[in-house]
Amino acid sequence: MTRGSLLVDHIGELVTNDGRDGDPLGVRRDAALLVEDGEVVWTGPARHAPAADRRIDAGGAAVLPGFVDSHAHLVFAGDRAAEFAARMAGERYTGGGIRTTVGATRAASDDDLRATVGRLRAEMLRQGTTTVEIKSGYGLNVADEARSLRIAAEFTGDTTFLGAHVVPAEYADRPDDYVGLVCGPMLAAAAPYARWIDVFCERGAFDADHARAILACGQAAGLGVRLHANQLGPGPGVRLGVELGAASVDHCTHLTDADVDALAGSETVATLLPGAEFSTRSPYPDARRLLDAGVTVALATDCNPGSSYTSAMPFCVALAVREMRMTPAEAVWAGTAGGAAALRRTDVGRLTPGARADLIILDAPSHLHLAYRPGVPLIRQVLHNGVPR
Image (cartoon, rainbow, N blue to C red):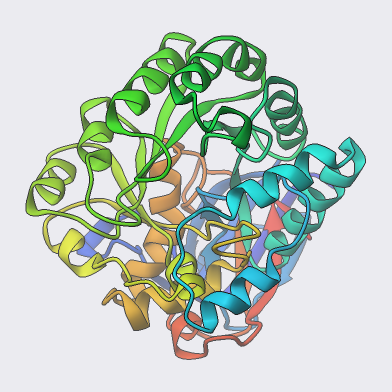
């Protein structure tokens, strides 16, 4: 790995996310950026750029922070393309297909699971995602949840224990026993490889009492709280997440006024996952309602084999603008700084001195083109930890 200083100059539009001058994106024109040892150490006008060991000429293009995908399920085996086709033909999404992936994942080897995570992580990086959270949740027994997290930890420091994804078939008539397993031996085996704990608090999955018990056990084990909430219908998940100080509640499709008020009065991020609505023909979350109430909003892919098999944050940005009433600037912020907030990270999602040098050079003059030109491969180059990829 080549180190030393690297200057990225001739930047037509630099998105810093520094939030100065009333502009959350902190856009700077005709800018340059200096990297040393994988960290941003200077930004400013290109005419004042310091000397460096190496140089990348952005050619007047836009430069953005790398995307921060704060919700992804990458450790799995199998394929659910037929389920997707059935939904496109009118079948309703219920979340029941998760158990299909559980069976395939349990039967897969470590090498097979590792290859899938590696393939999807490489896909994400090519599309500008430099930070990703990876959940377990397709093992649903002690051994397979632990190995899922062990493999995930080879690719990211933001790993999430999702043993409470659904109740597996073998516990279908004994959900209380399964909750006891999740809170006991499964958590003990998973915690060494996890930073976070998550629960799918939804009808057909886990109710508020079970979710509260599981998340409290995770907190006692030193894990931060995340929550799948209010995806399939109204429910208690959002307010439970706020009550427990969750870093993020994710989906937030069906919200009451009380849910929105709770989020607005908290530090909990609402992470919206438009790829799931696209892939399930479900209503999109009302991002405008959340933003106007002062809620911090993040965007993520929800990459998984059943309900959102996309690894493309640019696609999610375009969907958020078209379908969720976000401005292009709000969507870009949500996919970078918003994702960082959802992971309680201050070193990513921005391009200011002290931040990790994770950045995207677009094949376009402005961040607007991510929504303006949907489906077009606009990521010209990615730097991860200051290293071109």
